Image (spheres, rainbow, N blue to C red):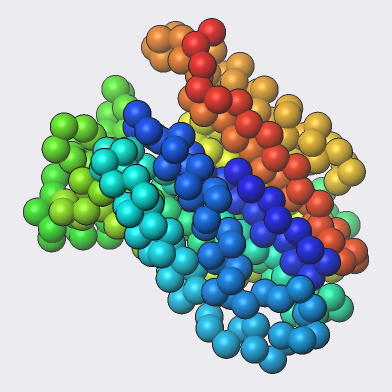
Length: 291
């Protein structure tokens, strides 16, 4: 995961590697993707100095270009180790409409299945409105399957034994987009991110933003995760992140058919205080382990 913050913006995200060298691939993305994205989006140290030029390129084009550049640099630096190993990548950027005075805007981009969840509780309301920003890139997703089949690829259907998988030479990949996994390009795998519609955060409401690896989402629905973390105040995001990670870990341990394996669990929680200039974020992670 990563969290980068200045007065005018907060950039945060999660990477979840897979394959024998997934840890190297995810580390490469962690090191390069945030800076590359911010550089292309032209977020400057002084907001006033770049207010007219910072958004010369759209977020979508900047994110798409950044993901492609990082994929290219990965292939150049780790050509063999990134053929059958890769990573998810989910990036979020919070900025204000008018420097440090306007409403907060949330922009996201992602590949894979480290889902981004946004929750809003309207002023005076008792319940949270919860939605996932974008649909995970699973091989059997209708539009993803169409692209894979157009490239001559095949998808193994999911079932009781696990999720659907893109068949790539000697392995099956449980996602249709990632950074790395370069052996899968010829059968329809891409690193182009999906960019959900941006969200405007109204000042009078409460907000929660969650980015988690599938080690969380395979065990918990978004609404349940939001309900759990909302019990913690905005000042205790770290406690909320640790509790959510622990809850997911416990559920993995209770799954007898998982053979004693706990999937990588990474949690990043942001509780934007829309009245303040700088939102707060708290990440935590539990690496894949037997129990």
